[in-house]
Length: 126
Image 1 (cartoon, rainbow, N blue to C red):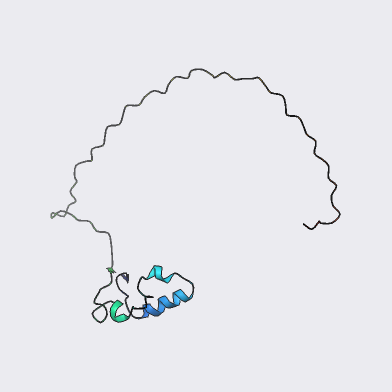
Image 2 (image 1 turned 30 degrees about the vertical axis):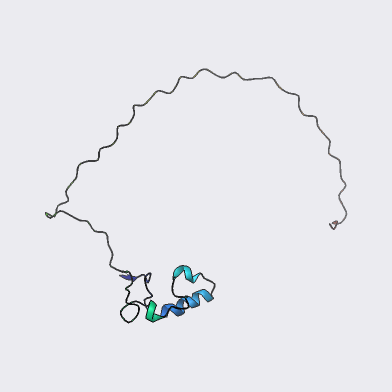
């Protein structure tokens, strides 16, 4: 696969109309391209390659994970990592017994009756 980012330069002149349309649709096109909407930007100073700005876009071709092996071709094992010593476990403190519970009570709050309100026959305008 192939991917060209267009981060350093615009890949071709179509990027100008693409980002102008994106902005017209309400998207933040300037967050996607820092140069496409600038009034000074033209393909001559912003497009990639020798016909444009002379810059080249970041390109990725068949990117994959690789491993670097020693010249013999076998994977050499390095020394095992040295882990720091763990502190010895400590015993949890012994329980000091059950805490005393204060069983004294307070008087129940006095009940205040609610005033009864008759329902209105029709909604009341505020």
